[in-house]
Length: 509
Image 1: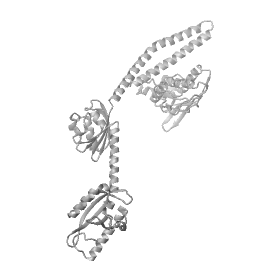
Image 2: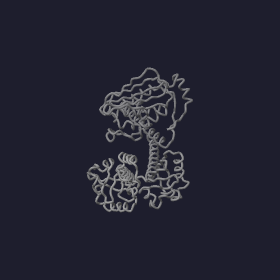
Image 3: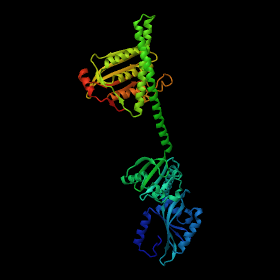
Image 4: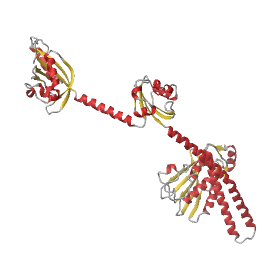
């Protein structure tokens, strides 16, 4: 082995040095000043693919790409001058032809007299490092492309509030060029934002080290923005979007609903007087016809009774529409609570609706015990009317409609259960979560069977205000069962009247 130190080591030192070179993971080789390879360790064999026998005696150009010949000439000139080449990142060629990224240290070799006789090269494989750097660069490039392409504006801040990045959307919304603001404090770039809600939330997210989301009026844009703040060890990451158009649309929708509800309320109110007149005249004529022997008196009385019943139903629908309007406007429903036995209320409703159809058979299956509660009888009748009319309407082929009435005891108390089961078209599974929403119509009946989508929504509100619940079980094509659950009054009608006297007379919608 050539002397790398300029001194003449003893045999033991040479052996130690040779062992170090042989066992090193770094590719170590030596060459003459003419560039002829004179030694080649096992790591060089692994790195370059040539065995020592194949490499020793051949020019060092063996592993130097042709496009690096000038570089090789420069290295050899430095060696001849006794200069060392430190940490040169370059490229060498493997035996199979592929290029290898390496880091080189090249040192001159001197003989015992101190003359430069060649050079020693130590090479470290940079392939994995370069691949990792390339992967990192590609990842950063992909992240940058994503951040530039997303619809949200995006920027990052360091712990001193200096802007470290902003994407094209942020540039567009802010009306700035990123190179002009990067490295500057956000509050210096936009002094109008200092002390605002935006400023306070940024500071809170940084102080509490937790994500925050908020909406605010932007002092920079002049409109509404939605902001998401994400703290990190180096500062804040911020996403924001302009939601001015959405806010304007929401305000317009609220105004439209307000106008609609006011119109519905006014129209409903105005309809009540003529409808009351129709109902009153029908009842008067019915009593008058009953006192005299008129031709086909029975048919006349029956017709007047149908007019009276229809007017009653229309009056109930108007009251329902008024209730919907009151609730939409945030008003309260006034409940006229009295001790009421549910069984007669159910039977009367079933009898009335049986008179409206000859294709359906309505049956009541009821317990013999009284089911007395502190209820608004008129509004519960409206709930029953809705459920029975729907059972008939949504069973166009006819069939049996079963109304069951029973008592239930559980840990929460005593309850009256009313179930209305029909053999009709049923409700699609996708519509069932929305069946009690205002104006919602199931997809299998909208446009085919008339309806407003108000009845069930109003019915559920009424039942809830009585402390009960209204639920549905349905299968499309196999009918529906609606269940009303209402709290009973302990002790029967006498005690029920006393309790109703103490009951609240209204409930929030």
